[in-house]
Image (cartoon, rainbow, N blue to C red):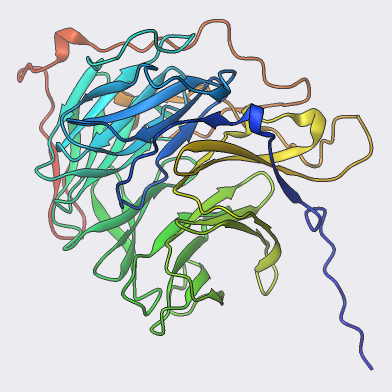
Length: 431
């Protein structure tokens, strides 16, 4: 009789735990919109959540320490005229957050260090270029002040935020609604999934399709995709029988997935969060009450199920803390901010270890807040690798954050603008 050999992994016993009630953020009216974005963005300073607002769109930004019951009159960021659909903090400045809305605009906001004392209605800058609602935002991981936005007009725009201008506009690549869009680790490629059942890897500066995969999942419900280690791609979607699936792809050979696993028959879209330091991918379903996590490795079956965190209440959204915001002394390897109807609940993922010493095998050098290239350099073709930091003594925020400057003199002036790069049919583009 052959015994099944259990694969050894230091993450086999990772467990999730919700923080106590007094460490949650309570009495917040989370947005009722049915849009499939995270509805939450976090960093070591703040937690931001999209909330219900009368007469427009709003989101709330709370200092990390402001736990407990939040007063009804607590000020919000409320400059949009339509519901907010997505928010994302800038990875290079913890006080800067972008928001996309049904009012077709993208706005960039600066949050003061202690949080808001009065409602914030004036953005630092307003980016206009979409003709329908803007549902996806993603900051460039290594280039300072580069933002991606995707709208229901099937258009994807790359902005130079400091100049307030759209530099690349991809308006003929996607024939239908864009479900997800994200960068690879150094921001040299963009991965999108679309309602036309095609997953595409794009050259962001040329706006061209490098490679595409039709029908990564057979079902008609939304597909999500993220880059994981070694340039591979992990996608979540649905089978023809509406079973939820997770698949891993090698872009060099898109014919067949490296692995494809069926999970269950729930209807919620699975939002994937990948941690390149540990190789763990967390799948959080909108409307689920659980977070499943898997380890992505180089050997078959490539995506190994680790465990599941479950609770009674379903999640309306999910924020994911950057590695530098975790407590390394407690062997915390991930922290989620789960949105309920009326509250936000932190959930910590921990590797059980007895020693109090720094566990360097759990915490390789990780991405810090410093960008490696400026927007202008990046748009001109320069790539930058992530600037890594050690977490051995915990993350110490720089005393002075990288100042957010908008070049007012460059705004709205046609003379200083380079011509907008439009993408047309896939293929080499003159830039």
